Image 1 (cartoon, rainbow, N blue to C red):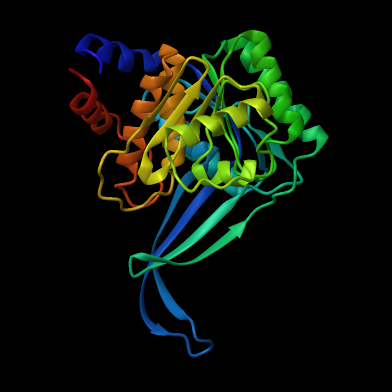
Image 2: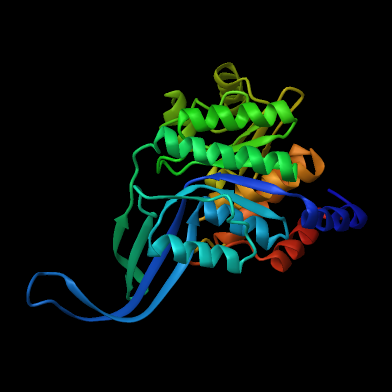
Length: 333
């Protein structure tokens, strides 16, 4: 619990807590329409298109959540020099996200996930993307941009957001974490399976339960504080990190570090869609930790935020006012 003064100070601090996000950014395209008949050419529904909508996705959605809470946010990514990249930049700039350090490659395409929606459900998804690792030349450009930003802006925390699209190579991961450690800047990681154990020396490591089981190749028949403490110890042996922060779906969230650990139950919600919830969780946890260095508070707030966005359909950032109201209702005494 926290008092009203601490609550006000926390949310006020977000406006001047600079966060950098390094990772895979993408365009989410939605084609909305109605379905009235089956095609005579093949046994597939005909969608009569009525509306097109584009949103930012991947690491860009993490940045969007940070900006929604007021944090000055900068993105580091590699995209294509293509119309999708221009549209993605336009959407990000409209939200006040700094895109000056995004590198446009001549040889890659901007990831675009096109969802065809009919009868209020997804009928099909088309993915246009490159998922191979970025080249050494591209990673050198990305890292040069990152070093220049850190030296100029002195951010409060860096998030590494992996969607397995090739930006977070082992070279980029090691270089970013090493530079941040040298500068005394904490790092928060949202990993994927491919480079799961490559984030050595990070501050906060935030997988979900499925990723932990696959990454460590373990079974976990019972999710409780004892089993999760063992997971933290196993991760610590591989990563030599400071904090494990594991999202547990309906079980809530867990954090473990050298002097504290806690399993925080989820709050009962009417779940509509879980897409994008992980982006909100890492954004809120990272921003709160950067502002307070209090991991228990960061986990509590991230748990609340993740539940709130699950009540919305589609990928959507946290609403600051709704979030403040919910935190005040649940945590402020």
